[in-house]
Length: 389
Image (cartoon, rainbow, N blue to C red; front, side, top):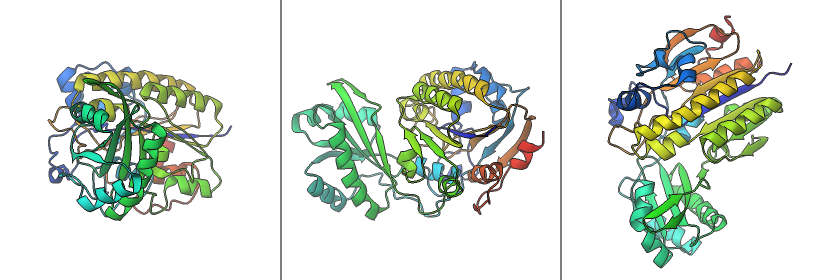
């Protein structure tokens, strides 16, 4: 029977301050643990079964009995961004951090994009996405100027109401911005469409990230070059491009994402499924909403339970995160944290393997699973623990 690997990234699900967290002002960060301390005890039976309570103290998740190879991963890359996190998971460590602009973008960058796109920007500041569209939404509707903002990450975010600029045209502006932002080493340009009326604006799931093409080999390119078929779900194609993805699908929230994944793995038409679940980060983490974060965890917990039921005995499920976004720390930005590591197969023995030095360990392990050369120097495979049944 053909085997498949499912790599599921739960966006922002940090599990404790990373060794270098102090350099990022995140020494007290612990996304999962602090959510549990704020709204717990949590009732998440699948997360408990998969050993998340072994990684960090989580109120309600003792994980005394669990199933899987469990640990934590520290990030080796510089920066604290979704792009660097996902690239490192896929084996590519970023040694030069993307540029951040906490005080807004330089005039020459904005002027060039305005000239090439024919659109004027307002805002140009560090802001929460929901707050800035409420603050500037009416001016945007009145003047047709696009809302520009950034965060603690390397992101050039453009918000536009669907009545001002169609989604298609917003993507065109973002593509122009992507070209100019390359010269400033900016990690992502993010199109942020929204709808609604003044004081009742709502962002839609038509968000699209325009990332930089990975500057080296990733697990996607390596698998593709060795004859394996890859399927990207969620924003994977935004972060990696589509060259080495044989099929992609964008999803509208985590329920849609994990339901879509479930239907895909039932068919088993592909070898490698790479999925990002973004709601915990986008909807709850950045908005400092621990109660909402817990509700989002419940959605994933239920979906994971259904995923486990569909795995064949030789299938491999790996669950991780790309960074933290602690919704209790008083900041709306990402937090420098360990991310979870869970490797699950139907007949696997439970084993806690502790803290590891790079997200790239996942890419190396997937190489071993598919019996292809491990080309990722920054990775250290944990496959030996998976096969030690």
